[in-house]
Length: 109
Image 1 (cartoon, one colour):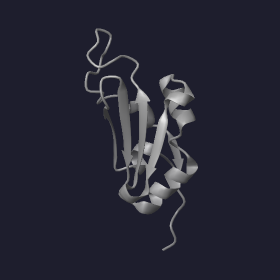
Image 2 (tube, helix red, strand yellow; image 1 turned 45 degrees about the vertical axis):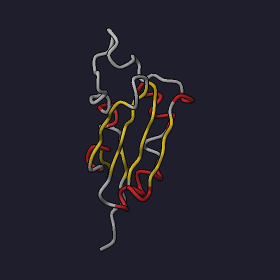
Image 3 (cartoon, helix red, strand yellow; image 1 turned 135 degrees about the vertical axis):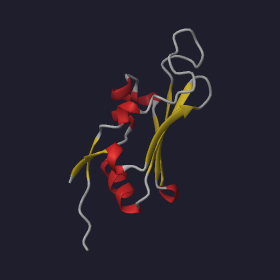
Image 4 (spheres, one colour; image 1 turned 90 degrees about the vertical axis):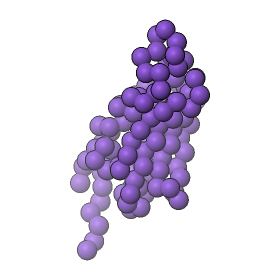
């Protein structure tokens, strides 16, 4: 079944990780869905760099199997609170992740 990351995840959020970095969190409530998304590399440094116009080397992606979560750390386009910053807390920066396509395999009953 083809779906979006927004439909597969329990929570997708972003927040500041200091004034110059952002953290993106993608959390799941189902371990099998988490594993499928993780193993498809839906969230990869290459993909995030492309979505946010960054160099691949500036993006860090972490998988936390025990928390059923994927985490991304990346530099902010503008430092938090600078005159050009439109999102001081970084809370609206997750939006490009929402429509990423995910293929979920049906589970046997």
